[in-house]
Amino acid sequence: MARLIPNLPRGQETDNQHATWLMIDPGSGFAPPAWQGGIGSVHVARPDRSPLTTEILAGIVDYVSDILDAFGEHDPGAIVRRYYDRARLDRYLVQHKKMQVDYQAAVRDLQS
Image (cartoon, rainbow, N blue to C red):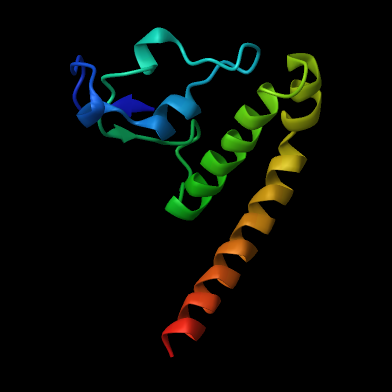
């Protein structure tokens, strides 16, 4: 991940909660200080440069949100064992996509 504009001042206009979440250290549950404010817009890419859709990125951010919720309730070691698993993430992304499809269908039904 890379900032589009480096060294922005901290403030509400430059907060980017999702970018902060993506930079969280798996052991502590906190992002490095440099990623806690003054972030602005970012580019997010896979290390292998394969396509990363906004749909997948949204699912990953929601998954990280679940991890952060767990940090408040469980031992960090238990969180690592439970969530830091690629197969679990892949299952979550499938469920997330279905949830989004169902939500869009419900919205269309309400509008018609």
